[in-house]
Image 1 (cartoon, helix red, strand yellow):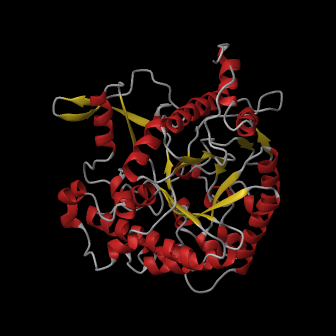
Image 2 (cartoon, one colour):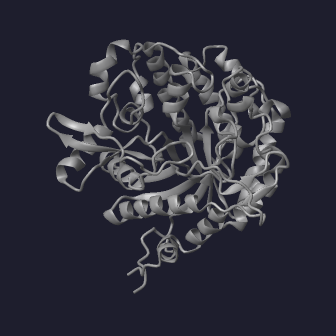
Length: 466
């Protein structure tokens, strides 16, 4: 009996990257510094003292990388624009050399039959804007509007798919609260809420600009962290406990879903968050919430794992992961149900098509004596997670795409080059690219629109798939 096709015909099989992690520093080509350039120069902040100055040298080697995308059959390429590369000071004067780079990249992608999905902001805030207060400054909404307008005017004749912000939980929570990421600040929670408020307004203003000025019909989304909770059993009680905990707020941190998504899709901040720290919010001016609440076409989610939850005597309770659970090199737990419950719960709450905007495995890969890179753990990881996503689609969730993180190994933020997330191995000394076994496996998954997930399972386990 043949395996039934579950993934929709127009499903987008993609990969994702981010500008600072692969391009090489913007200031090397006429652009300006970002907060990550600043942060990398602080002793002890990045593993082994590494920087994104060269990274994968994608700026100079993008034609080679686009050729790889084509050879691997990748359908969609999620990329980000470096804000300081095209606006060295964050506002004002433009860097034509930087804009021309993105022109060439987009043209090459289209010529290769790869659809570009452009993320406007993936953490590389211009340094000069940080010096003016960054996201703490209400003017950041206007700064982001100016930047968005420049990108849309330049690229929207060829780009239809847009994402506004990537993981605000990280660039606010890790960048401004814990200080683990750039710019490395440790602010009070009132200041964190202020920066978050401006960030959400900037998203809304960007959506307005794209809608009003795009030269081709736009498809607009947003890519927050997907903080996923999964039930420990199939019981109704555990399922509802997991759902409740996935959409609740606890503690003075912003590692949650609702503070970052309810204003955008439901029109206001969540009540449980307001009851806990609404007194710390900045003044909400008339029109602020309306600005955040702009129509978008899909909800993205960057999902790597989930946390188990059960129904307790006093409400939902998080439970420990099982002892000895598989973990990635990042020590993140391997939880293949994350894409199922994440996609399902987001779909049921927000009623928006879902796109998995990041998912992948941080591993310690190296070149074997045969000159190849064998990464069976990544294949197994992706197969298990994608089977979970297939289950969500079977359940009835409208899932429009999946973007594996990442096309190639790259600068992994404060971890430097320690972790390798790529389907393609990068030798940072020579810049040689070597597609890993997982790249060829993913190519087969794409060619069969997901059917190979089952054929690959049969090959791996020897079990017959009915």
